Amino acid sequence: MTDGNLRVIFDSLYDAIIIHDLSGRILDVNKKMLSMYNIPYEAIDNLTIEEDLSASDNPFEKLPIIWKEVINGHEHFFEWKAKSYDNKKIFDVEVILTRISLQYQDVILATIRDISERKKTEKVIRQLSYHDKLTGLYNRAFFEKELQRLDNERHLPLSIIIGDVNGLKLTNDAFGHLEGDALLKRVAEVLKMATRKEDIIARWGGDEFAIIMPNTELKTAAKTCQRIKSNSLKVKSEPIPVSIGLGYAAKVVENQDIFDIIKDAETHMYSNKLKEGRNNRRQIINDLLERQVMLSDDLKYLTDVCLQLGKAYGLKDSELEKLKLLAQVHDIGKVAISKEIISKLGTLTDEEWIMVRKHSVVGYRILSTYPEYAHISNDVLTHHERWDGKGYPRGLKGEEIPILARILAIADAYEVIISGRPYRKARTHEQALKEIEDNSGTQFDPTVVKLFLNLMRK
Image (cartoon, rainbow, N blue to C red):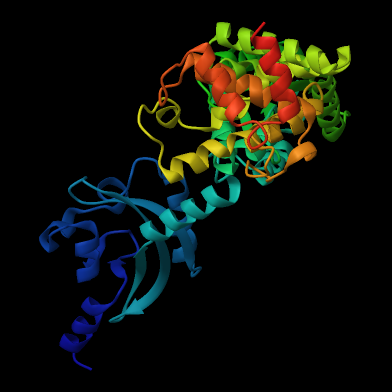
């Protein structure tokens, strides 16, 4: 084979090739090398790989050892950060150095392949394998890997914080999993704001987060928890406010089992959730109630009418207390309806009415989550049912509808008529009474309507 043919083959190879003499001087390169490094052929005579074609963050101290071993007949494979001749690009390469005989002379053959795309792919894979896709935080696999790495005397005291999101189940059940996902993302941002760069924050489970804090005393972990709680109150969050139950513990001596420390942090967290549970639930409910469309004076009037009608019906005190609570929270499900629909001046479309009619179901889901409100959740669910069975959401009729819901339906209708809504002008007291009387036996329980009319005409 002629030298010309060999040159054609040499220049058509996929990999960049550099031929050195044993002292490291470049003897020849192929076309791939010139294009990879963006270098003219005439520039190679006075070129050195280390000074001219390598990024500054390479382990240069290893090169003499590698070169010596290659001269002694050992092939060497390694990765390297290369740079283009014009300094415009830094890229990853893999290099194979081999000693061969070429034209009666021993030379060092460097085979170089650009692996930049592979490195990018590996980075994406690492990102996916060690990060939670939803929040962008580390996942449990990475958390446990880092826990193993940091679990030594050099990183003591090693503090652990465990957090559990309050209201996630409520958010998922009442507003859908997209809102639940949004809540988890907001929690992740709160945790990042409250922690240091060296802390490891991970999504530990569905609604649980964990933080590793190396070289951190227990009192510092406690202050971090306070910052998390403080930041939770500041962040804007709808429909559910950010609220996190927190617990912490610290490993201070090497013979402590780190998994016992995690258990201690979890126990502390659950203890705090138990103590704070009622307040957290009240905070979430109050936040939702504050967004109700009804003005406080109208709500007070509705409650008074309900209680008067309940007394006229002969309800016991315990039932009157339920009725009072029902009047105050019956429309809590409307937080799931967009403000545009709630405040729309014109007639609602069929699609908008479908959204509006979901509010009793949403209210039921919200209230059934909380022990303090679960006993009235079924009344919230049924307060838009009709006596003739044409109501929603279940199409109940007659006495299938709970009595508290039947009482509320009349009082609520009266309040809507006399107060008005964006889509409906307010009317007079007498007009309201006539409309309710006209719908006795169809929309409303006729017995309760009779009591209501007697009560309101006195």
